[in-house]
Image (cartoon, rainbow, N blue to C red):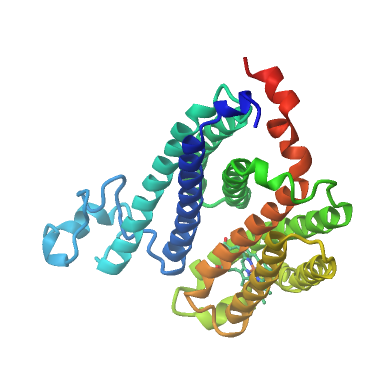
Length: 342
Ligand code: HEM
């Protein structure tokens, strides 16, 4: 260890890792919660904002509401308001998780303070970026609603969610820079190409998926929540492209898995990651199939959404690990450390 490396306090690094990991988990939880809100139709469970039925902790029974609550809130819901405690609480928990996410990302930023004058200072700048991106995401979310779910807005919202996940994962991995740079000291061109193809295809699939979901929302609005078994047949051709494109992702995922397991020198971490990648692809296809052929069961919609972002996350981790040598070389090279730290 060089003398300048000592500037990075081991305790601060441990704290940062824990906070960053918790933040990533919270973001995934909020994505799952958002999916559950949509699949259960609980979006209007709270007719007002930021309070819910006029209070910070929503009611659990209709008797706790004013007698004329339908008049008070009916206007916002175009005359339709029937209190449903389950939907109200699903939406309420979703909002709490949203607040928690903002708080956790801020905490990550605070935990990055000790690194701002060290060779790990990128942790500080990227944590700040994550914080700004979450602010933009919140603003975009409100625009998605006010633009009545304009397809490009929904897609942009989704892409920004992925960018936030990527920045947070990068932060987490970067805090292990020293350990990761030794895994692929000379890189690995073939793996790198495969993982980039897998990532690129998954991204295309995800964008297509949001368009299918968009179409689905229109179909649901037309046919109603009870006609679940008719939703799929009313989707346009993009659904069929989306369905078939998953075969390509499965094939690339399998080749990646095969390549990693074939090479004896493959690090254990990468072996695990490519196996998880393949497993998620299979589960993602399984939830897709359950929607397509079993009347879109409500549980499969949020799982399908969550899995798609988990998939991108795992593939991004593999990419960072394979490229860690050049991504983090500067951070850990004694020469660089001496030049940046007084
Ligand atoms: C690797 C494979 C796949 C990926 C990454 C993927 C990804 C996605 C994504 C990101 C969405 C948007 C979810 C949302 O915004 O709530 C979506 C929607 C959808 N996907 Fe997939 N998908 C895959 C495979 C499949 C397959 C094989 C099928 C059908 C056989 C399928 C059927 C659907 C349907 C029906 C929707 C609309 C869901 C909804 O409205 O909640 N997907 N997909």
